[in-house]
View 1 (cartoon, rainbow, N blue to C red):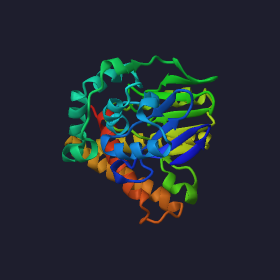
View 2: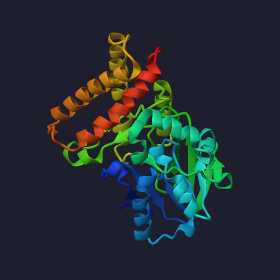
View 3: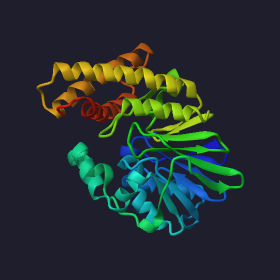
Amino acid sequence: MQDLGFNTYLIDLYDLSFPERTGCYVILDEDITIIETSATPSHEHLVAGLKELQISFDKIKNVIVTHIHLDHSGGAGVLMEKCPNATLYVHPKGARHLEDPTKLIASAKQVYGEDFDRFFNPILPIKSSQIYQVEDGEELVIGNNRKLTFLFTPGHANHHISIFDSTSKFMYTGDTLGIYYPQLQQEIGTFILPSTSPNQFSYEATLNSSRKIQAFKPEAICFGHYGLTRDTKFVYESLKVYLDRFIDLTTSKIEENKEKPFYEKSKILSDSLFKEVKQDLQNKNINESHPVFQIIKLDLEVSAMGLVLAMDGNA
């Protein structure tokens, strides 16, 4: 549990059993608001965090998911069953999949295969009466002179939203601006990588969304993975640099391996991406035994699949 100031707290949800992997943000104002739920196996950690904050389920008013990828919204159904007075806020393109997660489950099984149950089960449907579809620029008042503004920020996914808090000036960006690795903060400062997971990644949309977020001049960025950084300028610049490198490497690997099947191309690309990122970090004196490499490798395996799908006409 971290106190971020402005009556805002970060609960570590230990996604995939990793600390500082996926988080839930809790805003304690007149209307108690939760941003992100992670996957269902993380629910016990969310419950423990709410208990530490002395929040009962019936007091929760708003639950917001930045997008419906299961590491962000998979646990929403379990949570909403316990929150009789809460409304879940989501992009219109994602709402129907939370009400009926059948297609969402099938899509995730294609990506995660036999690991699906361990990562995500169970995924419960949410009653339509509890779901609210937000509009771009819409505002939600959660306290005296405190409002949240919803922004449509595609790039990582077409159904992605970011949320700006008028009081803290925090921007909750889900995966749009990538993944932040707080495990490296003490050694090298802020370090992020783009998140290009299947199957809606768009280079141009990602950069457009980054510019849209910058226009709000947030004082801090709150990532779904994981935590808060005030080094906002570095985030915007690093996102663009790594995106360009990822795109260049994907282009060359697809050309070199154009006759190979999708999953083989993805594996070749993920290995190449990991080799580059690992070298970058070793150049900054991060030892190859550092546990962050295990997380980065997993992230890049998924991102490689999204890059191949987006850029390979034969995928």
